[in-house]
Image (cartoon, rainbow, N blue to C red; front, side):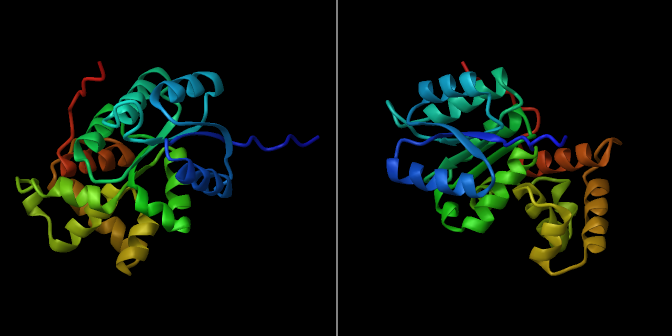
Length: 228
């Protein structure tokens, strides 16, 4: 007798009722069951503790202070429920929140601007990627992080290698990079191999070296955020 496939669950934390309603629809379109909808940090922590979701969508700024309640709750979830993937949504680019999350863990994490929700197909792809243990960083977040990245060995990269590493930082797969740059996947793989060599990364499995390359690129490797 065949067992029914397990439906993955999600929790949504967003204080805007209208946006929360839209997120529920999109998350359900992505194949998730929405286990809870909340509007503040304490509600999010309680919902995650109760439902143990596969994914939590979190607004960065929530009541009562509308400052960093969402990201602090997310960092707490990262520590207490590490199997829950996190996708943070922000109205504006706030790079320190992205770097805090990446420094805490590079698996199953995303940081997107709220305007990305309007591109439903792209947003659904990002949801699934994060839930599957990947990353999804908004291109504007990556661009702002790179403003201060002028140090070596990144300067060794060719313009094309720089483009490939930027797309890697956004969380795209080799196929996604190939599609974006209109090149073959074998060409992408060759560029990535060159990038890993030029960044003098230690020998390790390919996935781990790829993460190390992205962390070095964004300048967040080795940071330990205070989650207080």
